[in-house]
Picture 1: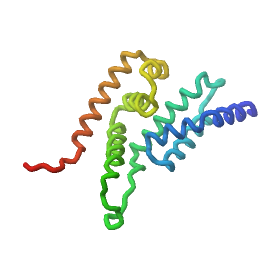
Picture 2: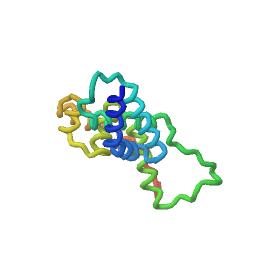
Picture 3: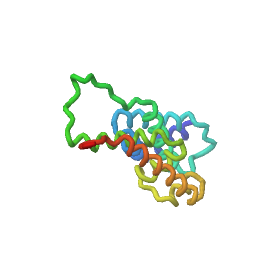
Length: 167
């Protein structure tokens, strides 16, 4: 048991930054990223490990992506502010709104497509790395990534405000 605890401590020390950064990139919120970090390592602790993880970095990155997407899907990142208390809309808020729209669109993808999209564009992994991490072919990664990008593009186009329309 002591070896297990020491092993978990070593894995945490080596990879907690990776899990937090991954979660923060997806949730856009430090508090949610901390929750993801705790959830991922609690799951690792509870997981029946017949031995050491073969590739803890890959497992933890995937777990962080999936738990982060669960947080986004649950709507916990939607902070409701009374209209009277809301700050005025400024040009600087547009990138934040676009990021929020992107995260919502990713959350509506299938779990596999969302995971691949997040690994590719939030974690900057190549198709070959993703294929190896997920145990699928590069061609399958490319197809799922293409579908995900098409769906996200369509949703972002729908969500884009129609400004300065004269008709």
